[in-house]
Image 1 (cartoon, one colour):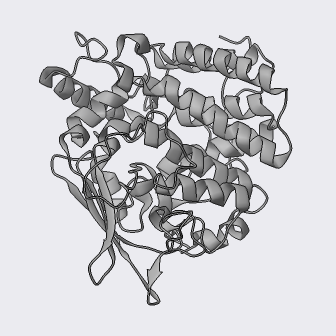
Image 2: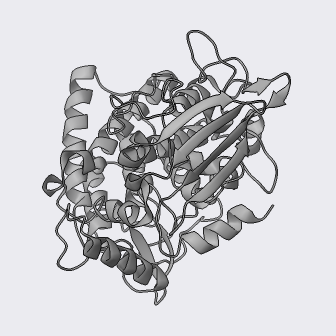
Length: 412
């Protein structure tokens, strides 16, 4: 079926997904562009119709002048934070590369001017098109719009706080399931589409021993998403092991063999992307409904068609995630600092599990506080190139390796 690729080509010229690419490589080969600039005359937090329209237009214009892009949040910041908790620079790179590839299917590093990076072929990820943001038929879109299960109810739970999600909460179904996939490796009850497993008393639908099925048949995942176009786009998938790559048909149960040496890093990167996007889209997804299974087809419904999810508001919120003063935003819209802290914590958990975590807890907490502050300040920089350099310099002051393709420390 060609629908996911068609959707991707139609939707992403003007819309962005969770922590969408903010650094666009200029078609001219010159300095990178700001992919999602704050429109002139629009203050951070201004959600007027004029600013929504201007943000959509500005993002489309920037992408129209670009030839590829990356997210300084998903790629560069993740690379830096992974090193901060103890991963070596090679593992940190692959974690960040698969974090970014979750949006793009395949990631290859490039210079700030869009040029080739030495050994770029060796640094290119395997294709993971099954979890691509435009994949509406194999459940990939659910990795980007991560809606908590509403305890079986057909309406949102007002107590849910997606700005600081708890990945051990089984109602955060996908996060809980993917976290187990990272920590425990591939298995029949991990890496499931939508995170849905056969239910158990202590794990809800997130931590069962097998991906959801009823009488040997998969369930249905149905719903709609309003954030990527002028009308809501339908979601139609089935439960079971997640399709990780459409072209090869690789499932989550065969992912480690498909990836090879850095399978753990790839799983971690995919999870971190879902965690970051849960935070990025939390206003939309906290107001959404996720319930089921109901009916003879055992249908799980994920309804993200509410007013908080509409395309114009969705794009404007991504404009507020880089290149603006975060403190000027309403508290619930300060997603970037929140994400940095949650990603640090997740990476520390993974580093501890791998036996590479560095520093006692007291030093780690101080480091987290400092890095969240310093990276937030760097990501507030409006100019795209200056923003990338500012993020690099946060790591340079601590002796961390720079992201492949970035100028070396001390180079303007």
